[in-house]
Amino acid sequence: MATLMGGMSGVPHRPVLLLETLDCLQPERGGLYVDCTLGFGGHSEAMLEASPETRVIGIDRDRTALEWSRRRLSRFGERFRAVHGNFRDIARHVEEAGETAVSGVLADLGLSSLQLDAAERGFSFRQDAPLDMRMDAEGDEETAADLLATLPEEEIARIIFEYGEERRSRRIARWIVERRERGEPVTRTLELAEMVARAVGHRKGERIHPATRTFQALRIAVNRELEGLSVFLETAIDLLQEDGRLAVISFHSLEDRIVKQTLRRLSGRCECPPRVPVCSCGARKAIEILTRRPISPGESETDENPRARSAKLRAARKLSFQS
Image 1 (cartoon, one colour):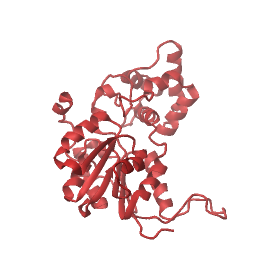
Image 2 (cartoon, rainbow, N blue to C red):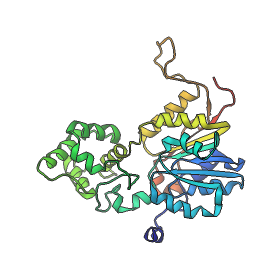
Image 3 (cartoon, rainbow, N blue to C red):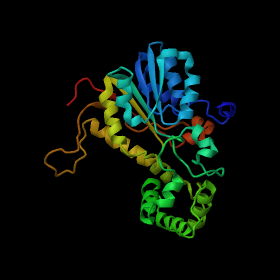
Image 4 (cartoon, rainbow, N blue to C red):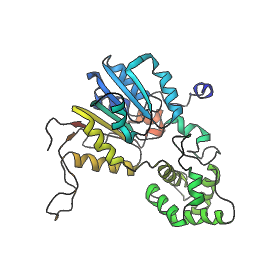
């Protein structure tokens, strides 16, 4: 931990979309808030500073992040509670805290700088490291290397295509499996990045590395990031008290699409095909959407923290009368 705490110079000064998130959540009203993806605790710190009547439950799968945030937020005493777990289990975590309703819920769905900058975690190909990618490094989930060593070629291609939106997924999967069949499975970040670059080439004018989408896809698959996201959002809305607020920050189109569609459905907008006589999508008017369009970082924030450039914030308010 000392090494981690001594090498924090690359951490952004502010969490992504901090002021915009606070404006949506209004933690100055007091009450209990749930930070579902605690990370470094920057959003939680700002919420706790907004009012002495504000309390926060911070949830994270990353034990290192939890330890860091516990130290950072220890000055708030019992107003802050750190929980190791998955944000999809928000209802259980709130119940275990002895609560039944909350004033606000925040879910920042992106990776933290702590995870990206720790080479040994295997999220980035900037440095050579084991191909891990687990958000809970001490958990029992399969690593990205495990998936590439065991999954059929068709499944690898599907993951890269669906989660990475990579059109050349079949070629990449073929190269991975051919290497595996030669007894040389891909186990390290630079091995995968270099292999993908050779498989698809680097097209003129491309601003991002050709392996970026493949790395995103594997990270999503390893951590099952999209599974249950819509159910989580509905559970979070149900936990909110009247006029409670939900804020969600996403970093790629797959997450943002799920958030957008779920919030629209919970605002009463039916998503069923036009000719279906009876609504079956579960639409109900439980919320008011506060962001007609997603809020994106301004130029000054992206200049300070380039990783924020793809962030999108959507927010909603719980209605008192639902139908």
